[in-house]
Image: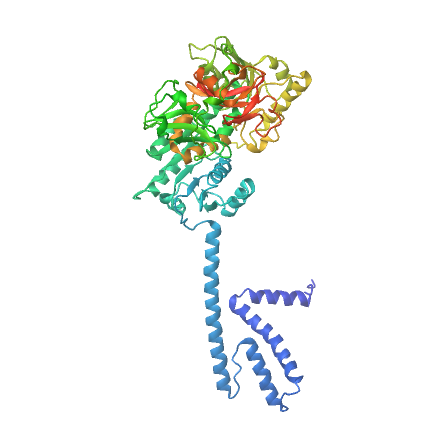
Length: 632
């Protein structure tokens, strides 16, 4: 059988590849031959075309050698063969030395740049904030810290997450935008490794925030991170305050022990459930919570006012023209909305809502009160409520429990689920508490199907709560809000068909889906991760506010409420907000703002105004609401 003749080009290419495969010596040899093949002919052309070149051939060849030596840094010395050889040898030694030195420097710089890109250098900052972990909350926390540090020079926030440093920087830049004067420092590595935690210099930090990850075992990861932080701070003279969050109440004790006495651990699911229930009781309350927790607006501060010592607390309510007093801090314990006759001690701190810590200045506002415009009738009586709960997740039992605690006689709760055994068992367990005024009824059905909602008279309910679905164990869910958005779309169809707006309270997991939700602009939407992030950022700036928020968001006791404006002022009258504050004081409450019905869909805050000036005047309608801090 005749053999096929291989083309010369293929054989030459194969021979060349085989030569290069021998390693660096072959590569250096080919480079030398290539350079000589170009430099020697080019040098010869330069010499033979030079009119001043020597005539003898030997002199011209020597000139070619000189040009070649200068080009290739081979010395270029002429004379006896020994001199030429020594010249080439010295040139090669010099070339080897310089090349090696350049290579070492290049390698060191490359390794250093790679280390910097990997986020493995130590942060050298003082009083900075350290954020450990990665979840959707990180964008809220970092953006709020940036807003809080807007007037602070040389502020810094260090973020450590088990992700690529470049990816962290790009994500923060895309979601947060310009950080102003705050430096965002990103480091990469596991948050459960004490050696990696030291990269953020936690011993010199002003506060450390530990975020729960978007994983099923997020709470265990938080506890492990807190233990790693304690190990990293072992032997250090200073320990920064720690703010962490867990989902399950079962992990809170372990997290508190790991965080230490100066740590604050929040239960995100419990707080979220409380806020959902509070929003279901009065429309627009979620907007109030967001305004109070957002650093872009007015927030809580603790101030001292010696001039009010010995005077009753009620006098303080009208003593600040641009701030709203809601309580006092006595020996570390917050007293929200105490009786107006409670005397103020010299060492008491006032709890106020103000634009900044330097905007709470005293001035008597009693002359702004118009008693003739104050309502004198009884408050609007509370009536039984009917609540419809669509969907079920791990926070649903907590929501049912909160609704039971706040239930008025004759109230009812209807739960619509897909009938899975685990859900039925949880509903049954939630229904075992005795002494409740809430009647609980379970309906089986898929809330993403139109026929399920059409069987219910949704307009007969005082509130409709839509919950997202938890991913199945071991099966991550790409978008947990998919079913929620479908349900909202069906509810929107019912609204358009009847021409009546539904009082819907929606729980979303991803803040990006807020713009996709087919609901009215001022509707109540609880972004669980965002609210917890806002709360963590607030506490990180003043850990003494922990007890204040715990009281405000508790199931019992003092809380934030939206009450009809007609309980405080006569409708149709134009009067100052100081009059509303005085009327609320007469009812044993602290007025901190209002919601205008006329501006509920057009204004940036959807009609919600927190901490308006006492001198602000407006005409009050029967559909307006007053935001107060008072008894539940």
